[in-house]
Image (cartoon, rainbow, N blue to C red; front, side):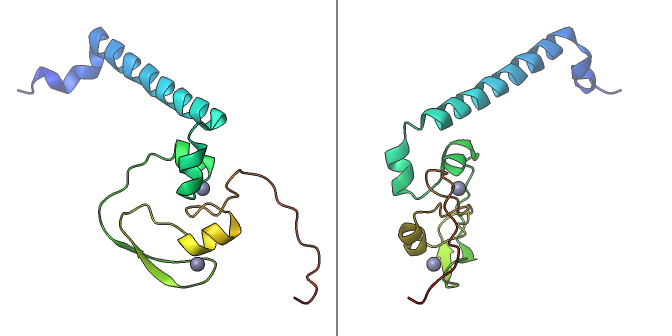
Amino acid sequence: MLGKSMYVYDEPEATNEWTARAKLHIAAIQEMLDNCNQDKERKQRIERLECQSCWYLSSGMSGQAFTQYTCQVCSEDYSHPNTSTPRVCWACATKLGICCECGADLDLKRRRLAATKKGG
Ligand SMILES: [Zn+2]
Ligand SMILES: [Zn+2]
């Protein structure tokens, strides 16, 4: 005989509990979006070379394993102390003013495209 717990979703109390959790989830995301729009942690964010999307909206679940990555700018191989692997190394991200995780502009500004490169 299966326990009552198999039918936990069938109970109004359970539905109410999941409803409450869903609302909390929405509230949490709303708060993340508010933080993202207000950008109050800009100073730390720029120091860590992350754009608003990666800083405020990524889950932040980074494991503790060293991961190997290749910088998408200078093609050097690096190892990173957790599993949220950057795409761009620290030096290149600093030089270009871009997010080390996704390569976006640190202030998410559209950049003017270089039309034609003249020597130098
Ligand atoms: Zn690099
Ligand atoms: Zn980013």
